[in-house]
Each structure stands twice: as C-alpha cells, then as structure tokens.
Image 1 (spheres, rainbow, N blue to C red):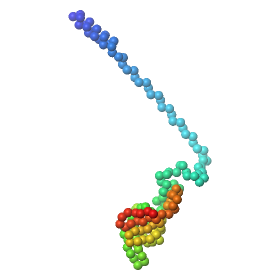
Image 2 (tube, rainbow, N blue to C red):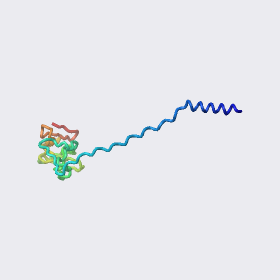
Image 3 (tube, rainbow, N blue to C red):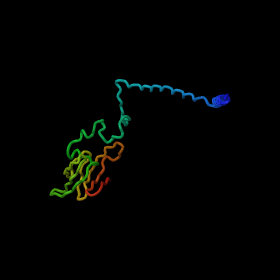
Image 4 (tube, rainbow, N blue to C red):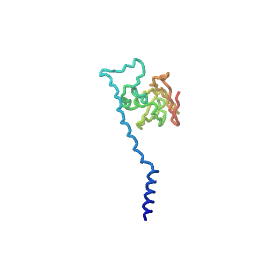
Length: 161
C-alpha cells in the first residue's frame, strides 16, 4: 500500500519538473502620447490669394457659388433659374412666331421657352423640330472655352459642341 502513494508522488513530482511555468502576462502597452496641439493663427489673420487658387477652397463644389454660399439660394424662380445640365426637353411645337419648347427643370416643373430666353447659365439660341440649342456659359476657371453649344434633343440624349 505504501507503493501507491509513492508512485503517485513520483508522478506528480515528475510532472511538475517537466511542466512549463505559466506564461507571464504581456507587458502593459505604453500610454498614448497626447497629440501635439496645432498653433492657432493670430486673431487678425486673413489669407490673401493674390491671383492664385485658394488652397482652402473646396474643389468638389467648384461649379457652385465661389463665395461659399449655396448657388440655389441665389437662383431666380422660373425659366431664368433653369440650369442647362438639368434641363429636359418634354415637347417642341410650332406657333405663328416660330418654334416653342416645353422644358422641365430639376424641380419637375414644365416651362415654355422661346429662342432668346435667358437661363441661369446660358441662353436658348435656337429651337428646331428636333432639338433645343443652348449657348451655355462655362464657369470653369481652368477651361479655355468660355461658352459651348449644347443641343438637347426631344427624342434622345444630348450633344455638346
């Protein structure tokens, strides 16, 4: 009977010798260093572009009003507020004085226009049986052309020249 406790003691002691020590806990992560504070501009600071592009200007909304306001807030109602890109030709008809076109704007309203009517970014040059020709003012400072001719077809898409 004494052999059983001795055998168990020998097994337990042998297991303890070959066993590895429990892993030490990982070292604590160093505390995050506080972000350096950026210097504040002086109270009387004002950026002067002196003919260069303003690097603080948002390039995504370059086609909108450059003064930082919303372009739709300064847009007039009716035909003078229609943009060429948002204009869709709904119909073309002939009257005594020439051709008329029914166009829809981004607001979904339909307007009747004639040749010579002013739009927000252009002028309706002519109206034919198939299309409305618009002389659009290009408002991109990087473009060499200041005007382009856009044809909005009654049946189909759009052609830009």
